[in-house]
Length: 91
Image (cartoon, one colour):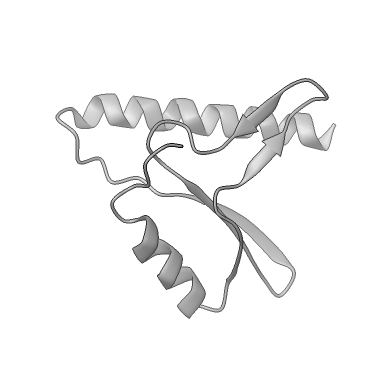
């Protein structure tokens, strides 16, 4: 299992204090019948939460490594994967 981001619990607690209910920690999505996307790529975890019928997915990033640009590019790659999975789920 991947390690949680340094601020994972802080973000989770802030969401709960704002009235969100944590539903998945981490959130796992089946993209197709044969492929799954575990949205805890790298060292980060995702939190799925809901409030008044709204649902969100939150990716926690700290950018504390040696190269901020490398971490930024990894984050963009993760975002692209999540967008792709979302599009596949709505088709």
